[in-house]
Amino acid sequence: MKSIVLITGATSGIGMEFAKIFAKEGYNLFLVGRNEKVLLNLKKSLVKDFNINVDGLVVDLSKRMEIENLYHYIIKNNYTVEILINNAGLGYNGEFDDISIDKHLQVIDVNIRGLTILTSFIIKDMKKERKGKILNVASTGAYQPGSFIATYYASKAYVLSFSYALKEELKPYKITVTALCPGATKTNFSKRAGKSDLNIAMNPYYVAYKGYKGLMKGKGNVIPGILNKIAVFLSKISPNIVNSKVVANIQYKAYKNYIDKKDK
Image (cartoon, rainbow, N blue to C red; front, top):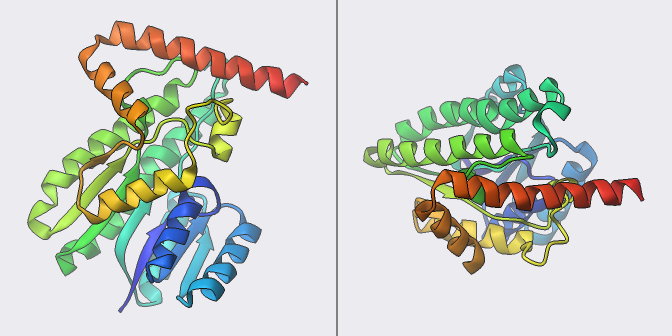
């Protein structure tokens, strides 16, 4: 069996930085993304720069059949997933009823259903091996309601809760589960949400590196950046009615920022 690190959402942002970090550490990779051209170029550059084996597929993680095909490809090619990085995710900001139901369901399908389906496949094999590491990318948004981006925040709350639950459940099998909870990060997703130019937006490499270090130490939760740690702490001690008002104000400004730039 050929051990691999499986990374979803690998063609941009945090996922791409994870790929570079693991490649530098000498791991063989299996990359999943939506942009075929970027995926092929990334594979070539990692093989050239780090002399590792890199495979990958274009997969729509909102579709169960494509996830099943991905898993069958992994088994057929004699791969065993040593580390799973569930990084793929998406979200849409704006007033809830202005966003189409198809887009809301797409967020749920990728961020919740897709992550859950893929994890269920990989866990079965990890349990047989009695070892493995899983990192799920959640968000600081998992800790409070998020007006003007409600479905995304709710989906990340699921990811965080799911990660904590699996961490305890899988301890007897020596499988660790880490939830990475970044705040605003300079990624394509943040650009679409109007956040990438915020002063507090973090570099995706920094986020991925902190996630990598926490994963390798077996930490259950990683929150990169002191300001994000403070924000999460305050959200824990404040009632949701306060949290929701604060977040609504922040998200509304981000949304208006996005609209203003779009209209220029």
